[in-house]
Amino acid sequence: MLKNNKANLLKVKKADPDLSKATRKIVDNPFLKGLGPEELNELLAYCKLCKVKIGEVIMHEGDIGDAMFFLVEGVVNVTKNLTLKTGPKDYSNLEKSIDKLDASKAFSFGEMAMFENDTRSATITAATDCLLFEIKRKDFEELAEKIPELGYKLVKAIARLLCERIRKNNQDILKLTTALSIALMR
Image (cartoon, rainbow, N blue to C red; front, side):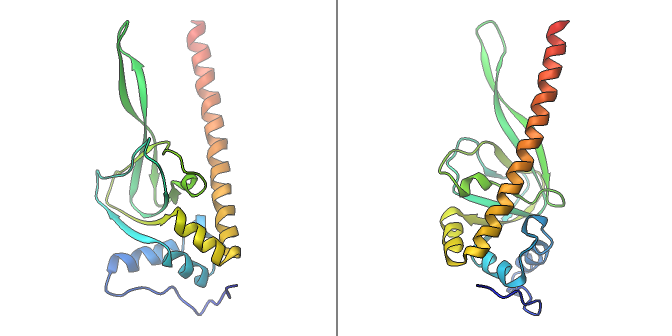
């Protein structure tokens, strides 16, 4: 069990200014609210800092997911492949932007990969240079087994986030269904 000791500040490798900056910023991440400094240290010990350049794909829709990411700096685009009818017998696949996540408002993505060995539901591409912390499923599970209280807090945070996204998606589906209904009535 960890002690919540405020005097124990997050440990940072001074040789890497990006790691230092990312570590300072993750302290303010609302997704991780409720974690003390020692718990954050434990979590970060299982994470890898990723520096992603603008235009780089972080994850591809359809790939098997085995990691989640904490977005600490930058903006990413979330896209999905859509199949559209372009002619009487012609179809084409297009990538459609469905969301933009900004580190100042959206703090993580890829959470479903912590619970299942399934395909990614979207493609995530860096819209700006980004700093991310990545945690692999096997490391997440090891951390949760090592420190069950911390594991519980992280699972609870993921559940809260997924519930928010489901509620938002339900509202979006309702709006789209209403718009389609109105369009078809004309």
